[in-house]
Image (cartoon, rainbow, N blue to C red; front, side):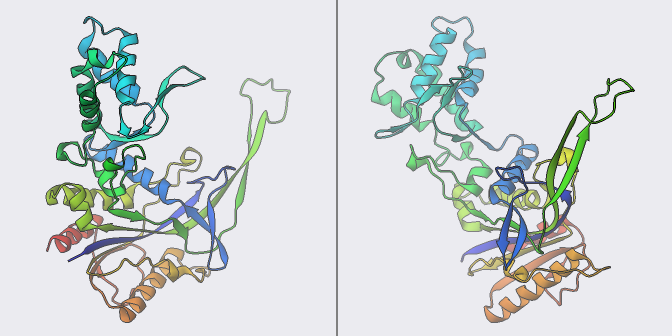
Length: 381
């Protein structure tokens, strides 16, 4: 029986620029005939991954081109003063090892940055700390062999096999299990994601606004007037609808059948999805506004259901009305209508700080912890 966990969040941010486009303006999208504020799914997932790092004792992966530096930091303290372990040889052995990674003619390449001379891979590698530790150990064990001009196929296989988070439970991470990874040079190490995340959009139409700012030289003579720097920053204020769905069976599969680890990971993801915030321009705007409406649905043998069409007609709040409350009521109305037309076996748990009239849509809880506990109980039966 397929089980899906969907999370629907309404989050009203004060004036902010959480996720910028290439011009520095807040991202947006055209939806339902009007311009909407938008936060990309990549931005949301990045915020959640950063939340993992703070909450999971290093149980996360790093996406980087600077794996050479990570390997040097792991190997160098262990081998200082030993024969052959000069800085030059260390970099040579690590480079040779990384150049073994790949399948067929597709190999990772280490290149020297033209600006600063730093050694970087030509592609981003998404590796767990445990995988990087295992790669470092494989390099240490085969150090002299890696210094040779021609490396044996056995050593090359040892190097590649060290990156076996997909097969070795101890080297798995929650973010890879949830969001997947794609390594073009090693398709056998790819991981299909257990989670899908939508772009967040505002439930209402928005217009861009501009903050004109000036800066004054603190040491300027008193008889001199005027600003010494000026400019503009674009921003908006929006109530965002945010949505994600997790395939429980796929999450357990990605974590090598460890249901306890999957349950911990699901709870952390749901909590992170609610609590984590994009960091764009927060030093300038400090828009730290927790969601006031959260609905988590546990669905069995059903297709996922994004409720963004509840806002196809942009929400308009009159004077004295709450935009979040009206958005929550529209979301609940759409959810009930779809449930009538396309019934699903599901349970819905709510955090309704907006005090919206939901017409029997779901079971309200008093705290996020209560929502998460009820969700995990429903998932695991």
